[in-house]
Length: 244
Image (cartoon, rainbow, N blue to C red):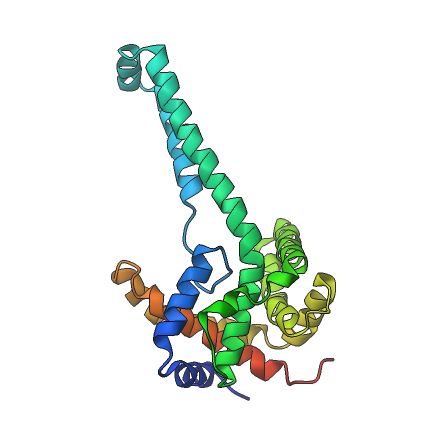
C-alpha cells in the first residue's frame, strides 16, 4: 500500500518535462473557478466587510461623524453606490466562476488523470467536460449542500464527509453516465478506510505551503499542480481497490 511519499514521487515523475503545461492549465482553470487543492480567500467578503465597517464606524465613531458631517449627502451616496456596485460585480463574477468552474473542475481532473497515466496532455482538456455542464454543476452544488448540512451538526462530521465525497469529481469524470448522487455514493464507499491516507497526503505538503506563503504566494503556481497530480495518483490507486 502506497504512502504519501509514494504519491508525491509519482506526481513528480508525471510532471517531469510538463511543468509549464501543468502550471498554465491549473492557473487558467483556477481563474475560471475550478476546484483546486489550494484555495485563496474571498475578495468579495473583504470588500463587503469594508463597506460594513465604514457604515458602522460612521455611526459610532466621533471622528468619522466629524468627517461625514463635512461631506454632502450626495457625495456619500455616490461613494456608497460605487462600493455597492463593485460588490455586486464581484458577486456576479463569483457566481459565473462557480457555474463555469463546475465542468472545468472535471476537465482539470481528467488532465491530471491523463498526466498520471503518462498520456499526452494539453491545455484544452479543461474544457473537455463542457457537455457535462448540468451534471457537473449539480454535483458541485449537491456536495456543497451535503457538506454544509453535516457541518451544522459539528465541524468534525463536516470535515469527515468532505473527505468521503472528495473523489466524486474523479468518479464522474471517468464515468460520465453516473448521476451526482451515484458518484457521491461510490466516493463514500471508495474512501472508506482511505480518508486518513488522503489527509496524510495533503498534510505532507505543509512545509511546501509555508514556503509558498513566504514567497508571497508565487510558489503556489507550482505547488498546486504538484498537489493535484499527487491526488490524482492517490485516486488512481484506490479506484482499483474492490468496493465494499
